[in-house]
Structure formats: structure tokens, C-alpha cells
Image (cartoon, rainbow, N blue to C red; front, top):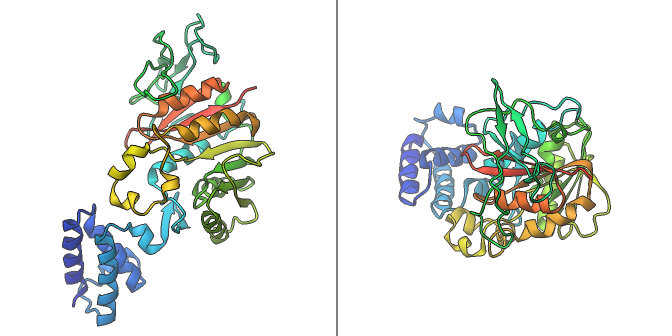
Length: 364
């Protein structure tokens, strides 16, 4: 059988199975069997495949038709342009999580001269009602200069923050930017370390968040913690693959238990799916990502309620917390940071325009 014919048949099968991008997935799996990249594959469309090659490609296509993700089939996912091995104990890293890396890097300049926050996906900046982390103050909220002139004021609607127990649609103190870029952030939202950060990654999984930051910060060091021993094994293997094993340590643990050191950056993609929503997730997620990496409790916020009040114990002064959140959770998580004493809180959108990242600076 010619490669082109098999690819067309495979794409049709995947489309019937409800797979997004069936043609792309068929080519990725064929390229894996034929040990070539996608560009080389295009040049072989008229190639006659051997029976062994045809059988091997069809086997992978059948796995994908059963809604096993391509990254799981290949055992590899690219994140931040770097290759990360996966196993059954690790979450499959998503492009949305690269928003956390962008945010951390954007805030890594000298504290006296912070870099512009010019993310391609936009920023929102959030303040407490008095602009200083207090509740019910009378001072007007601060304004931030916008690129091209003008200012963006932090919103204060005079309402109480949403309750921690659930409702995400309560009164909001969060400012949002739609198309304007913030040229100058609040002065204390930039890291003073300039690439020599110490980083703590909670729920590290593949280690992608920690290792991507260490790749960008050549003098930084970090610790990744995960409750799953097999995830820790995979993270260590990924560090070795990337040549970062001398600067990255990984250990088994439950969140912050046993952590005695302080860090410049604490980064995390905790479980944030509400328990009742998990049966309705796409099969690629529901059946293949570990439940412990998905289930955030009744409203998806339980890990944040556990972790955020403890962060002042592990962050250095001026340290930065960078947390991924689910759609609609940014306001509630930002409020948890304020209640824990964080006076500067910002959000960053992913490529889909969703507030995907909440950042907070610890200023004791």
C-alpha cells in the first residue's frame, strides 16, 4: 500500500472516531514508525510501504482512534520547545501551561527596572480594595500606565470578595485588559534575582514547569515535588535528557510537607477540575491523565485553599507565586492570595483568552 493511501484511510478513520486534527495525527504516527520528520514524510507520499510498516502504522492509528492521545502513544510531549517523556503517573503537559513560563520570565528583571509586561495573551492586574491588600479601605485604587498612553485603573466595585467556598461569579475587584498592553507593571512585580532564582515546583509531574524555567535561567536551581513516585522518576529522566540534572532535584512528597527552605519562585499547576466535571471531560483526558492530577475537589479549589496560606512559609521576601487556574477560577484564587497577605496579584491569559495564570508577590 502507498503511504498516501494509508494516510488518507487513517485520517478518515480518526475523523469518524471524533479525533480533532485527524490528518495531522495520522502523519505524526506514521512519521514515528518510519523514523522521519513530517517534512520528510511529505516527500514519501508515493512510497510503497512494506507489510510490517503498514501493520505498525495501523496499530498506532487504532490506538488513536480509541482516543489515546498522540503524546501518550509516542511517550513524548514537546513543551516550551523541549522534549518531555510521559508515563501513566504524569499529566500530559498542555500548551496552556506555557502561560506560566511566559509570566515568570516576564517578571524576572531587576526590581528597580521591571520589564514591560508585553505577553501576547494579555494581562489583568488585581488589587485589594484599598490598593494595599487591606479590606474595605477608602483610598482609590491605583492606576497603571498603558502602552501608548492612558491608564488602566484597578476596579473596585465596593462589594465584598466572592466567598471562598464556591461561587466564582461574585463581586470582582480584578481589572482586565482587552487589547492594550501594560507598559509598566506595579514596581514590585519584578524579580530581583535576574536568572539566579531558586524554584519550587509543586505537583511537578513531568517536571516541565521547573525544567523549562531552568532552561531559560542558566544559573537557577530548583526542587520538584510530586506525590507519585513514578512521576518523580519521569521528572528525573527528563532532567537528565535536557542536561539539567545537576540543577534540578526531585522528590516524593505531599505538597509542602517537609519543605524547610525558602524559594524565589513557587510554581504549580495543581488539580483544578471539579470532581463532578471529570466524567464529562474528553476521553483523552478522562481516561489517560491520572485522576490525582485532575481532581480539585467539589469546586476545583481545594488545592489552592490548602497551599496558598502556606506559601509565606516557603517564599523569600519579594518571592513570586505562579499558579495555573481553570476557566473562571482566577477571581477566587486571587482572593485567596489576598487573604493570605499577598498585596500584589496579577493574572495572565492563555492563547484562548482565558485567565490561565494567577501571580502573587510576597512582600512581608
